Image (cartoon, rainbow, N blue to C red; front, side, top):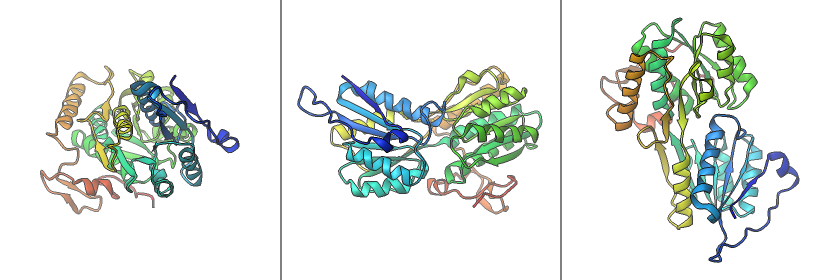
Length: 362
C-alpha cells in the first residue's frame, strides 16, 4: 500500500523517528522521497504546486515510493534540522523548494553523500546536489504585455518578495513588455520581504491600489492580493505559481502556473534506476515547466490573441523575453538592438532596466 507521511515543524520538535518501510514484493524497500516546503500546502500558490508534483510522484510509482513532506519550514537553521532528520529517517532523495534553503541544502548534503538533493531556484551544486528552476520571467513577459494594455490608470503595481535575481528578472520582464505596448505605463513596487504572509500581501496590494494601480502583479505565494483586488473593485490581477482561477474571470485574468510534476517524476525515476547525476535545469514555457493559465474574457479579444501569440513565440524559441535594445536603469547599454540576454547575466540579475523608478533594496 502506498504510504504518505506529513511531518509539521511542530510535530518534528517532539517526535522525529519514523518506522522502517515495508519491503516490496521483490524484497526492496520503497524509494523514500522528501519535500521541504517554505509555506503551507494549502497556500494556493507556490507550495501548492510543489505538493501537486509530490502527489504526481505517488501517482506515477505507487507502492514503489513513499513521500514525506514538512511544510512552513523557515529559511534558516530550522531548515538544517528538517533536512537532517529526513536524511536520518532514510530519505533517498530530498527536494528543498525555496531559494533561501540553498546554503542549508549544501551543508546537509555534505554530511549525507549517499542522499540525493534537489534545490529549487538556487545556483550552488555538489556531487549529490542538483539545482532546478523555471523561467518565470517568460510568464512575466506575457503578464506585462496584457497589463500594459488593460490598465486605465497607466499604473501597475508589483508585490515583490525578496530582492534576489529571480524576482528582479520578473519585475524587469513585466515592465519591459508593459512599456512596449503602453509607453505611458508606470510601475510601483512594494517589497513585502516574505514569500507567504497573507496579511502582508493584502496590505501591499491595498497600498498599491491606493496609489492608483488598477493592475497588480505579485511574486508572493498566497491568494490574498486576489482577494484584496476583488474587494477593491475595478482592479486586475494575475495568479502566481498556481492558477488561482477561483478569482476569475476578474480580478484574476490569467496566471503563471509552475508545473513541477514531470521533473519530480523524472528525477525520482533517475534515483530508482541509478542514473541520477548532479545537473542544473532551467526550463520555461517550451518544455512546459511554465504554463500560462486561461486568459479570461475580461481581457479584450485582440489583447488575448496577441498574448497567445507571444506565448507561442516564447515556446518555440522564436522570441526571447529579453531582446535588445535594452538599457540599464542608469541609461547604460545592456543589450544592443536584436541582442538577447545570456543565461549567466539573467541568473545573476541585480539591476533594474531603464524606466523603473526606485532602488533595489540591499
